[in-house]
Length: 111
Image 1 (cartoon, rainbow, N blue to C red):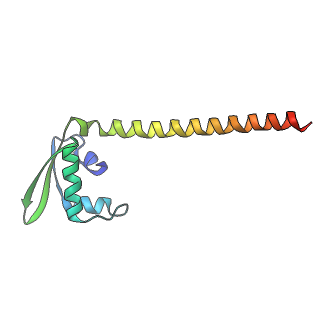
Image 2 (cartoon, helix red, strand yellow; image 1 turned 180 degrees about the vertical axis):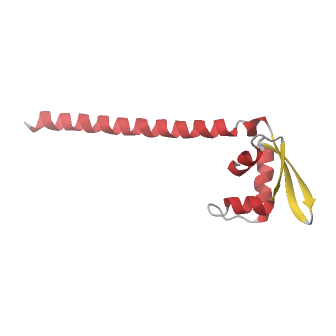
Image 3 (cartoon, rainbow, N blue to C red; image 1 turned 120 degrees about the horizontal axis):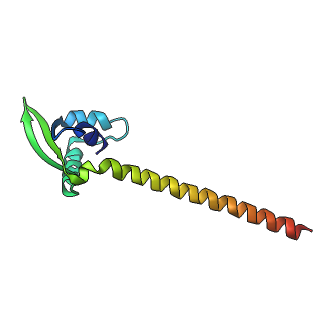
């Protein structure tokens, strides 16, 4: 979805080949063309994109249009990152609080 969101930014509809998508995600994920079809179908079912398959000079090409949920994908992703950092912050704070309390009890009962 990251690649499609970046590709569709500022455009209403884009043409994207399956090999182009596979090359963009290749270092991170290894998927086949059939798995890519399933991912595109799932993004369609989840309401992120409107996708149609077309044939351009013998190559499979996706005609992709971002739906409203897909246009908000960037904000959704930022919110997830923000929540993750907030969660990590709380965990660190609670850990430090535990260390302070443990050290205080250790100092009091050590005498």
